[in-house]
Image 1 (tube, rainbow, N blue to C red):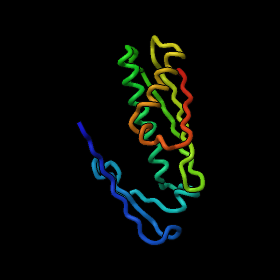
Image 2 (tube, rainbow, N blue to C red):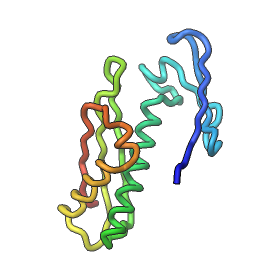
Image 3 (cartoon, one colour):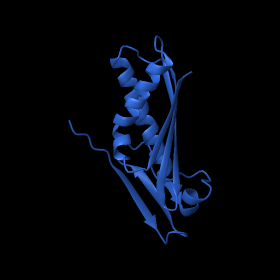
Length: 142
């Protein structure tokens, strides 16, 4: 079953002096979110950036994939907390680092690490980001 999600962005002005906004058209969960050159390449100042949105998408997708994989193996997690850090360097995303801490009864560190590596390799966002030169993972039980 194919699922489509949609977002819309508008930019006015030049790159450094202009500004943009985006809306999450499918869910309307975010509307008129502001983005500027400074919020992307300098300090956020209460605004987001494409890289922060990629980090949020990757952390969420990875957590869902890990939860599903653990449940299929008979170890439904109590809690998974994932942080994704996206590095933008000279106009390119050069690295993503995922950190996950999990509360999973009946599973040892090695089993958790294996499940996390499988989720990293197979979540749809990880697959979409396959061109990123370095995607690392630090996984451990809480």
